[in-house]
Amino acid sequence: MSTAQPIEYVAVGDTLADVALKDATSASLAATTSILLAILVVVSFILNLLLIATILSSYKLRTCVLYLSLCVGGIFNIFDAIFITFLSLLYVANTIWNFGDGLCRTNAFFQQFVFLKMIFLIVIMATERVATLSPNFRNYASAKCVVGVQIIFTAIAFAFAIPTAFNGFPVKIYRYRYLCAIGSGSPLAYNIIEILIYCASLIFILICFGYILKKGNEPRSLPVKPQDYEAFIMETRAIQENLHLGKLVIIITLAYLILQGPYIVLCFLVQIKNSDAFLRNNQEYEVPQDADTLITWVRFFYPLIFPLIIFASCHDIWAKFVNLTCCRRSTTGSAGTWNSNGLSRPKSSTPMISNDVLTLVATSEGLQLRVPEGNQMYQRQMMQKQINDAPAPNTTSMYGNVENIRLSSNSTAETDSSEANQSKKKNLVKRPKVKQSNVKQLSKDNRWKY
Image (tube, rainbow, N blue to C red; front, side, top):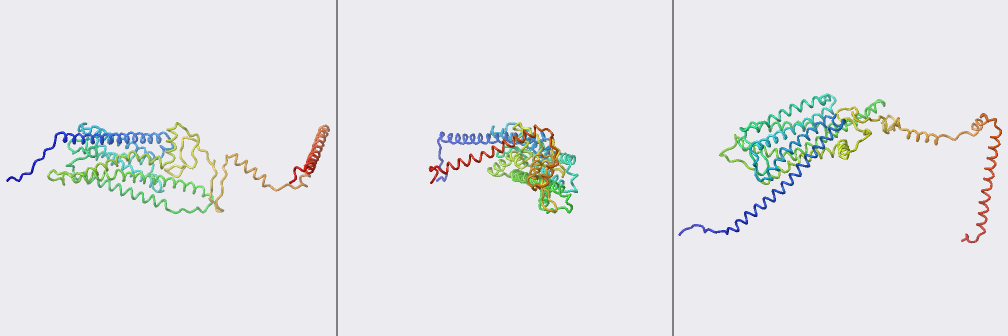
């Protein structure tokens, strides 16, 4: 007797229906993903472009080294939106990659370049904040030094990304990531050196943040000489402004680690597992589909979150952004703003009036209010207050002064003034009589009695 399993036949119509249902579901999911990616690309591109235009259109903003670094970050976010997210949108919309190997390598090149350049940019911003807060290293926070370091780090990022542009370097299309990346058989030394660079950059950033937080918690005491109080207040406000910008860099770093960090770790995990030293029997290591898609989706949001953090944290950038988008122009300099690069007043394109506000000054006798020099309204109020608070004049001295006044020899003027005084006295005498008669009449009237 044969022990073969019975064969069951399925109707052809049912099989075609199942395939059609799967195709319809896949097409609906691809359409939804394409719409979401398109919204991300457009919004990220517009916000980063507005951030760059806002910083470069203001002389005060573009003279700040940190703001120029943020502008560079916006430029690389635009590269991310165009050469990474937009290519992923095309891949999802077509359901297959039919753009050739050249565009695939372009996608992988910009991934390596943008990721490494962004971590280097955070290193530069953290170093600039530390140099600004430290008096000994304040000269290193100049624009020339920052531009020189930017060029060096850009060359390093380009050196690590350029191998993906050659045919000998493995590049693979990842279906569930919607993009291309380094494939199987990559050199293990390349991956290890790149990991060490990321780790060293992260450790250096943490050291800089520790110094920034320590600087913010340092106590400050008033100077001994009262004439140094104004400089002390100016220096304290400048330090607070620098600490605020340092906290902005910390927030940007946290956003980078939360949004981009998991994807970078995923890429390194797959690259090391599938490197030429660990790849055996051509069995590639694969990440589960849901984890691969979710981590990739999270990293797409970083170019969108980056400008939103800056607009929400920097009041001067937000004010300039509102003026730029609403076609408004400010005519007066903003009071209480300081240059973030040092302890001096900012260089603004609009004139700034000094001592035009009430200033609270700390003195040895306590807090005192400094009156603005050019405020005429306040001076009038103070003069009126002094007149009201002045003591009453002495009658004898007043009459003595009257006797010393020389009167005019015109007799007609004297007679006119005397007649006018007599008429006023008559009127003053008659009025109370009328009032008294009215009161008597009302008192006799019984209607007003209760």
